[in-house]
Length: 370
Image (cartoon, rainbow, N blue to C red; front, side):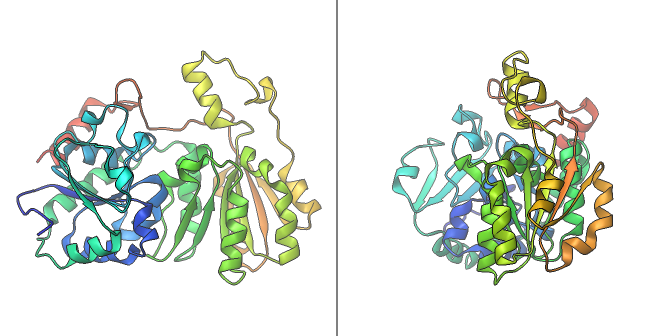
């Protein structure tokens, strides 16, 4: 037996190693069989979508996901390296009330101890999930319900403009969409708020590489691999400029890639750090400090791609035809320069900022500590 039956509030935490092992469908089978809440890492957000989706953990993770980790009594981590961005720099703060079962195919990863009493399995993620599926694990109906109730209570709390834009984009995507995501603030908004319909869609995300500019090349590769299929590219103004010449590839290869630019005319991820940690001393990240952007609509049209600029995300409804036809397009979504990225786990304290109101905190505590 791998799974101990003594725990009341277990979670399954899956990382990108699950997909690498070809075990994606087993996650959904396990979730439906046991009703155990499934959380993900940022790189693996598409492994738990549709009705299974709760969120991802870590520095910029969904608040509810991080709060569930705080209160659970067992973490089954499969194919997740549990790096600093996931567990923090003080390991004792990670899942403080929980036992840890950890599965990885890399012995070097397991040699980096997260919990002194963790139970490690050096094995393939698919093999582990198959074994787990054959064990007599009960259904965690009540715990599952309370986690989803907490998610519902927190749904609007951390929803800033970036999340609202991504949520609107989600509503317009077809079932099992392919989405390529660049690196920047929009990457975190997408990981937090991009909800895919169906269980076969993909969110191709830059993750730990910090590979700003990867969104459009990811989309090109995904489209070609899908037989020149439709792919949605979420990018920022900074990321798009890194590989903007690839717009010619879209035209030349006739790839139906839909580029959605979350354009705040700033390198938002960096300028936000310069705001919070460096007293607002900006350098080449804002218009006033030496960073500028072109007119993306005119650039796209110069390449022969239909394009439009909108001032509010609600105007995306006017372009549903563009998002579903067989031609490339670019929609430039203008946003304020100072659009924030929240929530965030503070490096110094391990606490989630901004803090909840006392009333809402008590509601969540009563659900997750029951």
